[in-house]
Length: 146
Image 1 (cartoon, rainbow, N blue to C red):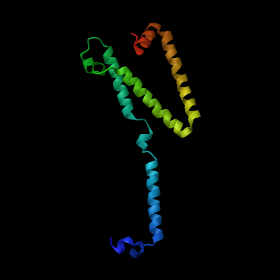
Image 2 (image 1 turned 90 degrees about the vertical axis):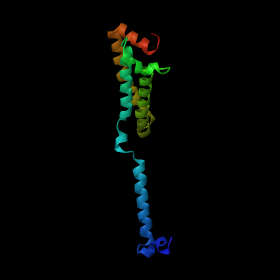
Image 3 (image 1 turned 180 degrees about the vertical axis):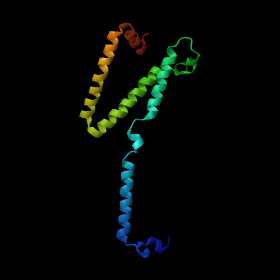
Image 4 (image 1 turned 30 degrees about the vertical axis):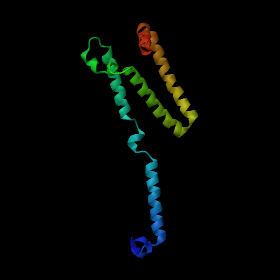
């Protein structure tokens, strides 16, 4: 390294200006890495994709004598598409409500979870009341009793 390159005053720039420019560049870099890109702030489409595939596999597994069901995951492991769907749904909920908890705090995140549960529970209850046989069968399938 030459003396000219090592000394900022040799190039006609004062040391205060060089250090200020460096501090501004570091601050801008820190702000840029602290904020996630806009694409990561919204929905993660990969989770929606795999949840949708799990729903299709669940549908295909319910069709009797279906040759397409030979490629679904129930034939290649200890679990089937229902477990994949539940896992991805739980991961998505943790992803969403974890962000709410980080931004707004534990109390407001808990309130959001309870509000969403209050929206889902009446719909499930109505489904079971309107179609008791089908609803009971779905519950038995879901809990691997049937």
